[in-house]
Image 1 (cartoon, one colour):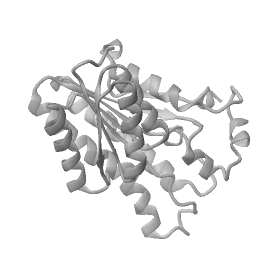
Image 2 (cartoon, helix red, strand yellow):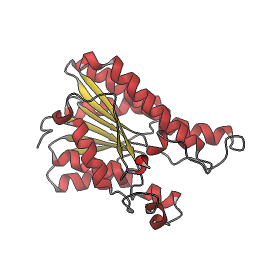
Image 3 (cartoon, rainbow, N blue to C red):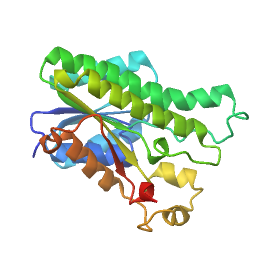
Image 4 (cartoon, rainbow, N blue to C red):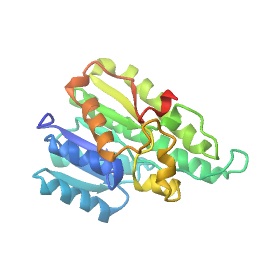
Length: 250
């Protein structure tokens, strides 16, 4: 159990990659604050953690709202005493539409959740970690879409995820001497509810774009996050780890 006496925040922890990673962190001994907008689903994540003997709480959070994010960090510290690990995973698949045709409201809703949300989480997590004076680890969820242009009206999503990667690098450089490591993961096609929505339920077709000819599992993302948060990656910061079955190698 490599995270005993560590406290973690997982945003977007109510389903999919976030839920699976929250449980994985708890299995490794971390106390976990599960953040999200859906209280019922968040309670299920907490219950799953408690079933394995872990400690967790749910905190309802809209990551695009500064007051919510500040309250989230404060709640983790109030409940568990510190903040050592953060997985900023909350995200939105965005609205489909060509750049010139998409409404400003739709475009910036995607940016608010995917980019502004990551920025606000980083801002207040780093403030807490700096105040504690013993460093910490942050992992942001981007996407392979942030590393390559994708056609088909996905510009707002692609741009938001690319911005997360730039944010990750900047934060990593600015806070390296404070002992805070900041990295990103770039998932490819992972079998989650979001992918089922984007694919219209045709997940088998999505798998055919991948050299492995299969979709990834949320557990494979959790494994990558666990490694990035552990001392096994102690000299890794400002890095984007693609977990994509070889998609970017094409």
